[in-house]
Amino acid sequence: MPPSSKISRLAEFDKEYTGGRSYVLGIDEAGRGALAGPVCAGAVAVRTDAYLSGVLVSPLSALNDSKQLTREVREELYEELKKLKLAGYVDFEAGFASVEEIESQNILVATQMAMARAARALNERLVLNLRAAGAAATLFGESGLDASKAQVLIDGREMKKFPYSHMAVVKGDAQSLAIAAASIVAKVTRDRFMEELSEKYPRFGFEKHKGYGTAAHLQSLMLFGPTKEHRKSFLKKLRPESGEREARQGSLF
Image 1 (cartoon, rainbow, N blue to C red):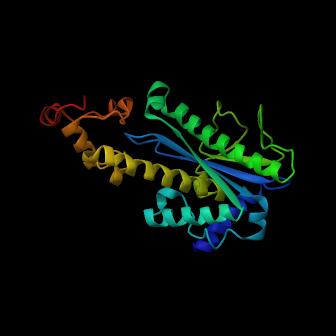
Image 2 (cartoon, helix red, strand yellow):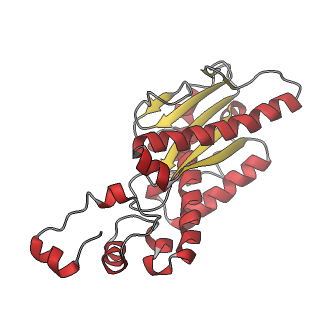
Image 3 (cartoon, rainbow, N blue to C red):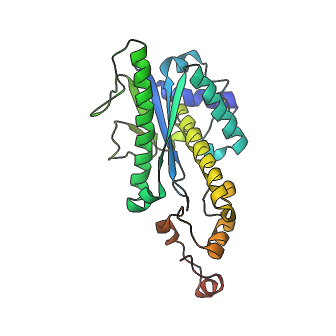
């Protein structure tokens, strides 16, 4: 599928939710399956008139699920989102849940925490913008989303404990422009965080694998043991294939 056709299809999906609303908000996460580092969520608000005008098609023509793109393309798309943000067509925020929160809760709850933080931070700025423009309306009330102003789309399945009204879209990063954009924000933000973390733990190569369970990462764990940035509950699920291998390589703990 040509890039222009792909972005047009993503935009058409979101247009179904623009009627009478100011924004479509997409939310996605990065780092849920990693062995180390936080989970990060991206929240992207797209103005409904941006869909209708077609202004997003050219700058975001390469948009797709962030996992399907190279780092270079993700970084380019992130810069395009920044330009669109300056122009007022989109806005975005990222939110984190720490390793400590992942361990004390679980990865599902921590992911919801990161998503809620990203959405809350984005909402606060959008509300300020609305008030600056002379509007008294809000996007999120105490009881959740004001659906007359925005529609929230979240990648994956419905989150029962998520604090805002939303629609879950399975494989949403391949269907929705707002969710695909959120996946770029989440992935680029988390990757940059892990690259900074690699300076503190240079022996682990976080700048390369971003905390995921690659062979090189597992080898480093065997040689040096886990750091405080590793998710111990995830590491416990790793089991050597045989006792011989365990004796040869040692234990993660």
